[in-house]
Length: 164
Image 1 (cartoon, one colour):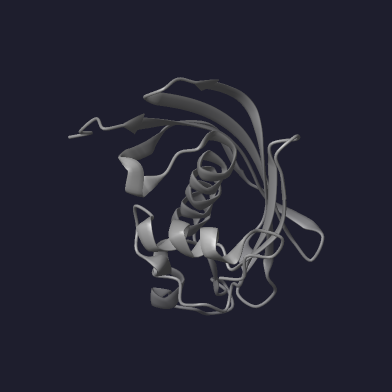
Image 2: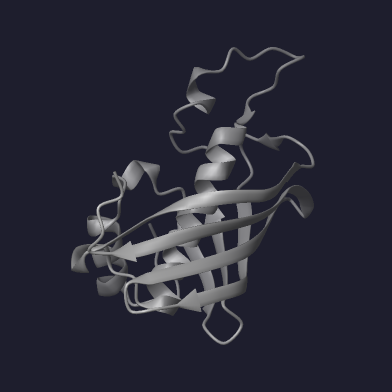
C-alpha cells in the first residue's frame, strides 16, 4: 500500500494492526486525506487479487468485475482508515468496530477488472466519545471518470469492549 501524503510509519502501524490481514484492506494507494473536510481519496488496483473476482466464471454476458462484496469491503477499508486518521481509533490500543448500517448502496455500473477505482469517502455525521465513536459516510467510487458506486453507511467503534 502506498501511503501517499500520509506518514509511512503510521500507515504501516495501521496496516499491521488492522482488524483484517493486509490482503483484505482494499486500498492500494492513498491520494488525499483532508482532516478538515473529513474526506479521503484513494485508489483500488482492480488487477490485484480479489477473493470473489478471482473466482468468477467470465464470459461475454458476465465480464470480469469487482464484486459487490469487494465493493462493500472497500467502504469498510475507507471507514476504518477514516476512524484511525480523524478520530484516534487505534486497533493496537483496544479499539474495534463494525459497520452497522448500510443506508444506501447503489451499484451504478460494473467496476471492471483493469482500470483502477478512485474511492472517495466523506464523513457526514460523527459522534466521538472516550470509548465509542459513531461515524456516517458517503462514498463515491469512479472508474475512468464514470460513477460505479454510491453509498451511505454508518459504523460504530468501541474501545476495550468485547463485540461478541
